Length: 160
Image 1 (cartoon, rainbow, N blue to C red):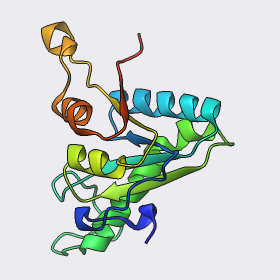
Image 2 (tube, rainbow, N blue to C red):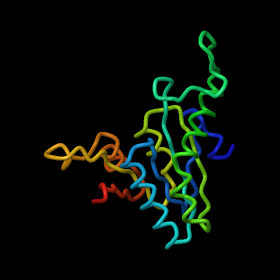
Image 3 (cartoon, helix red, strand yellow):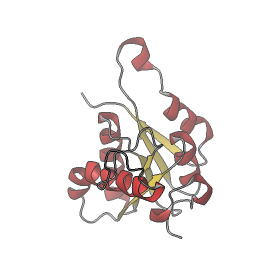
Image 4 (cartoon, rainbow, N blue to C red):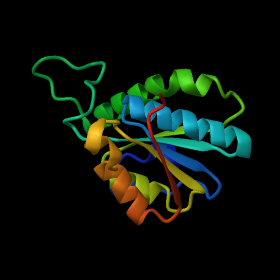
């Protein structure tokens, strides 16, 4: 099974040893993290794995969704994967020489990123940039990644 096929935390396959793993939840902070990961990957000539953790509550509706119809788990997973690829498209397009793969994982964000980056060169995460005192603190996902990841972690603050 490839990393692109991982859809459940019981099936997670760690990213390749020399890769950069980056979390992307669709936020502006995630876009900043993706840009930083791609810039580093371009300089280091290494692949990037873009990860989105999801739950039914956070997943977009599958394309075949209808009122009264219950979509399958696989349809939700595909919808999350498609949305991730779409959200990352503009940034990835700027780095055509970089090998990029995408992984939609049905699990908590911190657990997914920590598990997938176990063998990676680097894990890159963003912050939500809430401003004030809260903005000086790490978010729960980035804090968990810094504490528990087996590889180096880069927390990207918003660009101003």
